[in-house]
Length: 330
Ligand SMILES: Cc1cc2nc3c(=O)[nH]c(=O)nc-3n(C[C@H](O)[C@H](O)[C@H](O)COP(=O)(O)OP(=O)(O)OC[C@H]3O[C@@H](n4cnc5c(N)ncnc54)[C@H](O)[C@@H]3O)c2cc1C
Ligand code: FES
Image (cartoon, rainbow, N blue to C red; front, side, top):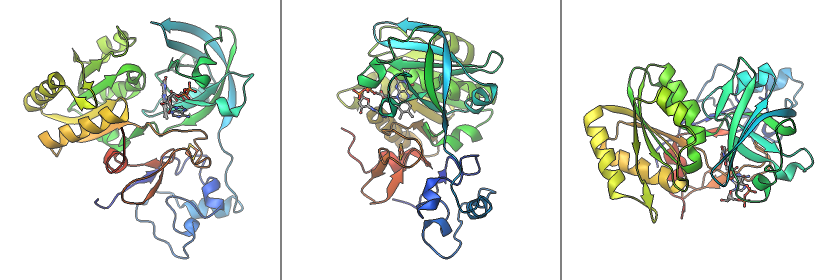
C-alpha cells in the first residue's frame, strides 16, 4: 500500500492535546509519540507539542455529557426512531459539519450504553439536532422508551463519522454521486447539504432496504438534482442493476466525487467499482468502526490491516482505501 497521508480529526480543536499525548501515543506529533525529534510531515498550522507545553504538559478535558430535552420523536416503519433534541447554540454549531456524530444514552443507564449516532440535521435557529436511530440491540432499544419532554444524555461533539472528509470539503461546482442504503440515509444529509451549498450538482442513488420507504424524502427533494431508487447489493456483491446505473452515471455525467453511506461491504465494493471505471474520481464513505469512547482511549475502534499499522479510527482521518483494503469485511 502507498504512503498514507492522514490527520487527527481533533488537531487544533479545544480537545487537543488529548490523553494520547500524555502517554506518548499521539497519532500526529512525533515528540508526543516517544521520539526526540520533530517530524511534522502534515503540518496543520498548530504545534501539538507547543499546545501541550502551554497546558502544563497535561491533556485538555475531553467531551462532556449534556442533558438534552427531546422536543420531537417520530417512529419510521417498525424500528427507526427519529429524535429532535434541544442543545446549546455552541453545541449545535459544532455539529453542523459533515461527519459529525454524538454518543447518546438514556439518563438512567451507565456509560456502557453510549451509542455513536450520526447527526442527521441541525437547526441553528431553534438550537436543535436531529438523529435517526435503528433499533438493533441493547443500547438502541433502551432509547425507545423515551418520550418527548424527557431528557436524552448526549456526549459530543465528535467529527470523524466520515473517511475521506477532505474530498467532500474540496469539491466545488462539480457533479457528485451519493449512494445511501438503509439507515445510511441519516448520515447522508450533512454531506448532501454541504455539497449542495458549494454549488455541486448531486445525484443520489437510494437503496431503502431493509425499509419499504425513505425517511429523508424532504431533504432529497431540496438538495438532490436526481434520485435513482436501486437495489445496490446482494450476497456481498454489487447488483448488476447498480453496476449498470453506476457505469451510465459516471460515463455521462463527469462525476468528480462519489460518497457512500452504507455497511462496509458496500462502501468497499463501490470504492473498487468506481476505481475500475475512473481512478481520478474522489471517494468518501461513512466511518463504520465500533466506537465506545470516541476519545482514543477504549481501543474499540482500533484496526490493524495487512499492513500491520494500528489505526485508531475515532481519531484518524484518512482515505477510505487505507481502512477498507486489506481487511476482512465479511
Ligand atoms: C460514527 C458512527 C455513526 C453511527 N450513526 C448511526 C446512526 O445515525 N443511526 C444508527 O441507527 N446507527 C448508527 N451507528 C451504528 C450504531 O452505533 C449501532 O447500531 C449501535 O451502537 C448498536 O448498538 P446496540 O446495542 O443497539 O446493538 P448491538 O446488538 O450491540 O449491535 C448491533 C450492531 O451494531 C454494532 N455495534 C454495536 N455497538 C457498536 C458501537 N459502539 N459502535 C459501532 N457499532 C456498534 C454491532 O457490531 C452490530 O453490528 C453509527 C455508528 C458509528 C460508529
Ligand atoms: S472509540 Fe475508544 S479508542 Fe476510539
